[in-house]
Amino acid sequence: MKIVWREITSQRNSFAALYAACEQHGYQLVPSDLPGGDVTLYSLNSIQAPGLLDEIAGAPCTTIVGGPHATACYDDLVNIADYVVVGEGEFTVPRLLDCLELGLLPPPGVATKNGYVPVDHAVIPDAYPSFSEYRGYIEISRGCPHSCQYCQTPCIFGHRMRHRGIDAIRDLARHFNQIRMVTPNALAYGSDGRHPRLDKVEHLLKVLKRDLGREVYFGTFPSEIRPEWVTPEAVDLIRSYCDNTKLHIGVQSGSDEVLTRLHRGHSCADALSALDHTRDGGMVPIVDVILGFPNETEEEQEETIRLVQEVCKFGFVHAHRFIPLPGTPLQGTIATPVIPEAQRVLGSLALSGRVTGSWNEPELRFFRRVPY
Ligand code: SF4
Image (tube, rainbow, N blue to C red; front, side, top):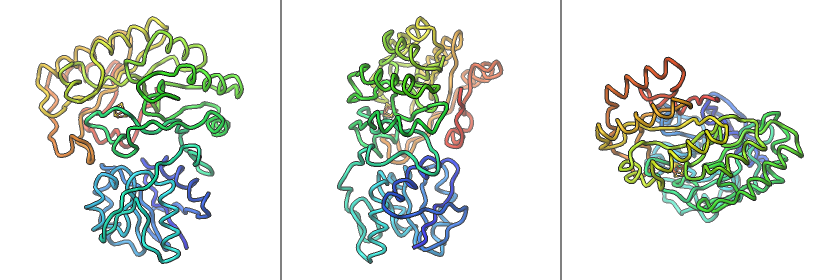
């Protein structure tokens, strides 16, 4: 059976992970910019999916779609693709390929026009490497106990954090001179996502830095840290073992009312403390903010802009505009326009390089991220 992976630039990490998973089960994925072979696999995000639906519907082969958009919209996509993988793919995709070869019904976790049986497992990170032949990011943790209303992560990976073991991370890290890791919250490594385990973070960083002797970047691109986890001890730990001088902190809004409506689980005071601890620890903060949440008032946007101005006195801001992503509690809501004053301040700070991001074209953040 020839299995084609439809190449989509923003889904390269999914390809790396699924290539490795399928390889473990004896299947080889062949990357291509067109559908073909016996089966073609697509990983869809919600921005690029609309542009691929006609191609999938007309593909001259069996089609399997997965990824965040497919997970969120599987009941629509069963009318476009033959099989829709809902949730994590590492175990389900090879299992589905087995079923196709043997002429069996699809396994749990796969939706078709004939129905859907929910998935019957959760992937243990150590069971599958983040990549093999095609390099991707080192994913160290999966799942998130928080419920930020705009975020697809808990919808796809669930609320229980699962962590890759240190030995497995070390094996993946050997492939890089600069080690960067993917996780919903870097400082939550080894924990339940609510109670820090800095002892486990330290063990991980010690192994990567001292055993491998590589450059280690932690709590920065391509991951970030929740503000209430940024403590003097945590900053000191990162300074001791890592090469990054900047910390990427997800704050999202300068308004406590907005943070509460979003179920962020932290306050503006937490964000300001995180900024102080970062600076006092000799590091530079990069703060993520989002503007245009549903029903966000002018005053609430102004509060976020005041936070942006405060951060930019000594740090940097990565600004986005809200997108109501499918599968999230805010699906189907309307983004509030970014007020002219916010546009003016962000534009001016962007000219000096203090602000980057995509607050005018929010889709851009799905196509590229800026490594600081
Ligand atoms: S935004 Fe971050 S903390 Fe919030 S649910 Fe998503 S991954 Fe978790």
